[in-house]
Image 1 (cartoon, one colour):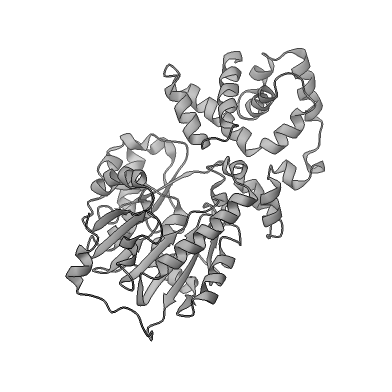
Image 2 (image 1 turned 180 degrees about the horizontal axis):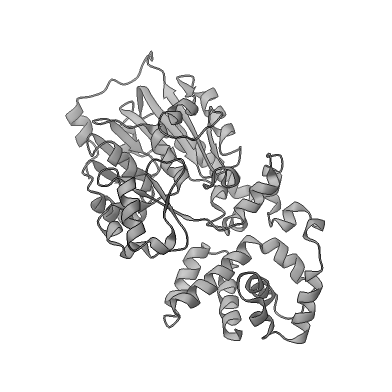
Length: 436
């Protein structure tokens, strides 16, 4: 156990510099220590992520202790996630006395931002949300793993039966409550070695993200743009729903991310995806599609605070300044993407955030500046395909209410009676304009 605490402290020393995302730091540290077994890695990672979730509270409680401050963080995380008696057995008398003192502190005596370990910039932005205590508690819990079937290759019921009989039985696969394609697993399975994954039958995707496809509503033969495609998860589902027809552009400013997505595209069996690395939101390759796409999805870069269950370091790596910069970037991306929407076409804006600045307020600013677009109520669009009941007009998901990541989406439509829109060129010209 002494060695384990040292390992945890070493990883935390690197993570708490905030130079890189926590998952990257943990993965890099494991690669540098290849002799660690699967169970060892799981224990180290679990404590590190527990500390990141509860960092503000642990730091405050650690102030009354002695010795290395990061070791005190490691001790608090280990006491919670591992056998507490085994942890105490390797501590000195001063550390045990400190643990006994902080055990007497009543958590409810601390302000919510301390006991819920929220940085001030984030607390100020969510403190008026309803049922805040439940939301904060949910964001500080680990998340299950959501996957989905590839509709082009598999049916969910058949896949559930296959997983239950085979390699996923110990991960208790169940159908997600809202997405017609989703399956929820417990634990952290090594899915990349499963034959279902290798053959493109399943993909990892949070249920909230899966529901975006229902709002986009792509049809066969259409031109669709996934404007911030990233690793391609949403692109894959859109392409499958198009039955691999039409043209599906996957835009992203990161050629590296798109390159990593290409094996996923290959496994999926799709032939209608055109990955395009763009230099910025106003890239000439974007401008060529002005007024041509029937559906445009903008899953915008955001603070990611809706994903704190999976990425607890985000709340410490973000700030009020970085949030303001993201909000400006989102507005620019949304404005540029909207130009691609054909008259009568659909624009879907989404984030994995729960912050009004990135969500409702962003959409309201866009609509005020773009009278050629109007808001479409998301509730009836979802009601046709999922039992999820929302008030609308937006899709707004919370982990404490829906069991998904925090998620937001708005559906907008470009009015048909527009003047001055560049007429569409011949289909062949359009389809060849961005081939690369």
